[in-house]
Image (tube, rainbow, N blue to C red):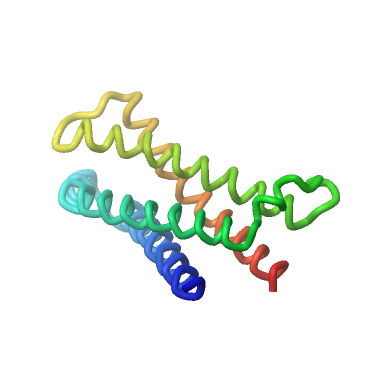
Length: 151
């Protein structure tokens, strides 16, 4: 059972990070505001639901694995003396931050789909999207380090 949950967790991470890489590439490679607007108008909602599904999968399977391996006890360790405690605390912090940024980003996206965004909405939406992208890579790095420590 644990192997299946771990497999689904890794699959979810692949889908989550792969999706953000795709949109990042589209943002760079699509030339012209019209091409970007049309692409995001059609791709945006599909991508949003796809990513929300995988985020829920990641949070669910991650929580299961966290408690299954009794990693909650790791959080009580002094992070200055325990590499595992330090890595786990940081990973959980970044996952919580990604989740919060995703909620903010999705609220703006759903509220303004097929409409004009205010300047503040554009800035917050783009900044949250970029932070999610960067933090995804950081969480992936922490996950690799944790796997190394736990193996």
